[in-house]
Length: 285
Image 1 (cartoon, rainbow, N blue to C red):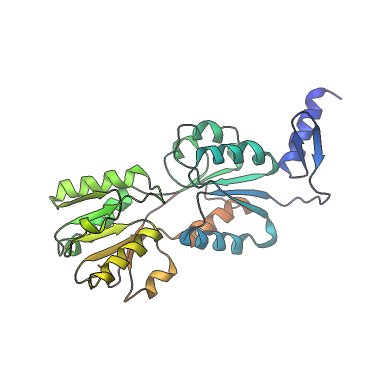
Image 2: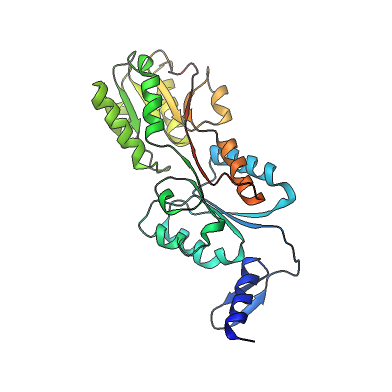
């Protein structure tokens, strides 16, 4: 047979997860189980509480219709590069939430675009055939204007730039534009510093760690969320309803995102979807 035919056959077997190659040694069997069901490489940044909601909804929807392996890159481009180059060839489908880095478009370009779903992050969606992303800028701006009467109860609004959950820059741009246009005092804080926190202000955090630290400071100072200061968490999780009298949030529907990702795998794709956030009002703001 032609050499190109053999190369194509090996590539197909790798995509189906049956074989893998070791440079300088050749090809080796990974399994003797042959199946026509999709094999999915799901790549997330981290397994936090809202990604857990997405994952459980995704697995509940796919059931036995697909085999899914989950990987994490922790916003590290070296880990992400190694995952794509070493493991992507084993899968028929790829659902990927990438880090923000200049190498990402090239790495994603090595994958079959017809079976690649860009997840959550929207910086690269114009390069993709299929995406399922958040509206980080206009959606956030709309929510801030929606809750402006509540914001004006406070002496300023501050957004914490988390170091553990690297949020897209579009969110911070929308926040800064809102403050300037509405002439509301406030700004972006690089971290939660107890010395910079004052009563009567509103705070938005976008990581579980920052939420816990902020609420600890509130407790130490005997401040009541929603009375002595406002607290909003970016990204909804079930536990927020049960913390204190409830913590307000700004979030897209992550279980819905998981179900839509599952539809991409099972052959009913809504191939270009942007999810818009909602404000969930509780007693903390």
